[in-house]
Length: 287
Image 1 (cartoon, rainbow, N blue to C red):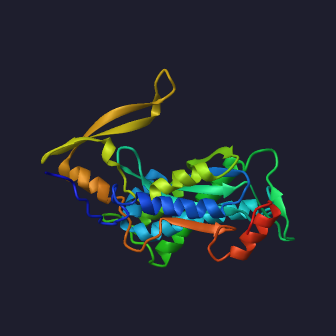
Image 2 (image 1 turned 90 degrees about the vertical axis):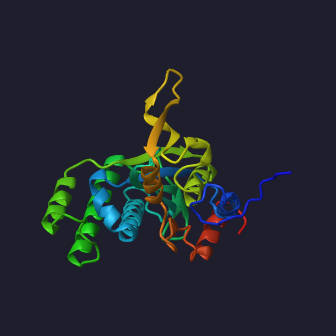
Image 3 (image 1 turned 180 degrees about the vertical axis):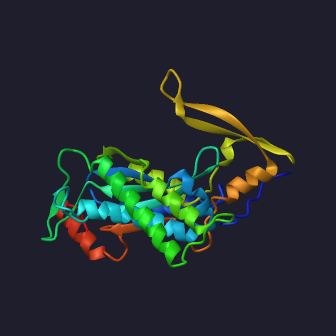
C-alpha cells in the first residue's frame, strides 16, 4: 500500500504549506475591518528602477511602502479631499504572471476616516482621489526618498553603474507618467482582503499552473492581462523556461527572513486599537 505523507516546511513562499496560516490572517483582518466602503489602490515602481531594486531589496521595499503611505495620508488628510485619517492595509507584490520582476503594492483603503474632532467622515462624490494628483505626488516622494538614500549611502548603486548615471535616471523618471491605479469602490473590504491574502504566503506561482517539468525545462501557464478574448476573459499562454531560469525567477520573489510584506497604517495600525474601536462605534459595530 502506498500513500502520501506530507511534511510541512512552513516556509511562507511554499505553495502547499500556507493555506491555514493565510486563512487565519484573513479571519483576523475581516473581524477588525470597518463596516464602510473600501478602495483598492495599486502603486507600481517604474521598471527602469528594477536594477536599483535588486541591489537594495529591503531598503527599496521600505521606500515603496513609505512613499505610497505618505501619498495617501497627505492627500486624504487634506480638507480639499477628505480631511480625515483613513485606515490602510498594504501588501507588497513583486511578480507578474511570467514571474518577471514587477514591484508594486496593493492597498486596501477605507472610503472615509476619523476627523480631528473625532467624527467619522465618508468620501464624497463616490471617488477616493484624482489619479493625476496621486500619481504626481507618489512619483515625487519616491524619487526624493531614493535620492536621499543615495546621498546618505543607505542605497547601493547597481553593479556597473556610476552614481551620476543613477541620478540622471531619476531626473528622467521625474518627467514620466507613473503607473498608479485606483480601482472601483467596494461596499466592503473583504474581497480586497482576500486578494491581499494571496500575496502574504504561497510564493510566486501555484502548483496548478505548472504543466510539466523535467531536468531541462519547466512549462507553465500564465494569463496575459493585456489581451482579452471575445468573451472578455484574459487570454492564457504557455511559457517554457530552462530549469535554472525558472528557479532564478522564483527566488527573485522570496522575501528575506523577518521581512514584512504586509503592513497596516492609520486606523488599521496595530497600535491604534482604541481609535479603531471608536470608529467601529461610530459605524455601529461592536468593539
